Length: 222
Image (cartoon, rainbow, N blue to C red):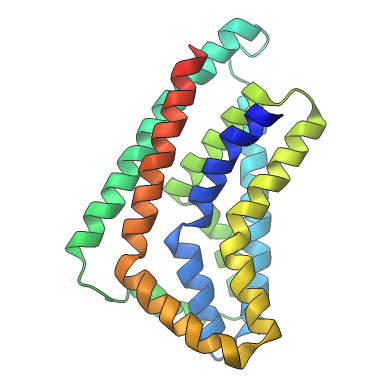
C-alpha cells in the first residue's frame, strides 16, 4: 500500500495544480451566479475526476499480459514510460505556451465561464476531466493502481485519495467562499491575477517533474 500511495500522490498533486479548473472555479465564484454555480461545478469536477480514474483502472485490467505477473508488470512499465514521456512533453509545451502569451491576458474560454448557470457548470466540471493532460494523468493513475494495488480495498482507498488531493484546490476556494464570501473575494481576485500571469509555468513545471517520476517508475518495473 505504501508503494501505491507513493506512486499515486505525485500524480494527484499534478492534477491539483492544473490551472484550468482552479481558474474556472475562481471565475465562477466571482461571477453573479457565485456559489450557486460553483457547487455544481465542484460536483462535476470531483465526480468526473473519480470516474475517469476508475475507468482507466478498469481498462488497465484488459492489458494483454494482465494474467501473467512478470509480463504484466513489464507491459505496464513500458506504458508508464510512454505516458510519463507524454506528460513531460505536455508540461514543456505548457511552459513554452506561457511565454508566448502576454502576461495577465485573459484566455477567451475564461470570459464565457462567468455566464454559466448551475447545470452548465456541472457539465463543464465533468468535461474538464477529459482534457488531454487530465487523461494522461488518469491513465498514469490507472496503470499504477493495476500494478501496485493488491486488493479492491486498496484500489478504492487509492482512488479516494487521488480524488481528494486532485480536487483540493477547487474544493477549498468553494468552501471558503461559502463560509466567508466577503473576506475571500479579494483573495480570489488576487489568485486569479497571479494564475493568469504564472499559472501555466507552475502547472508545466509540476507536469514535467511528475512525468519524470512516472517514467522512472516505469523503468523500475522492466
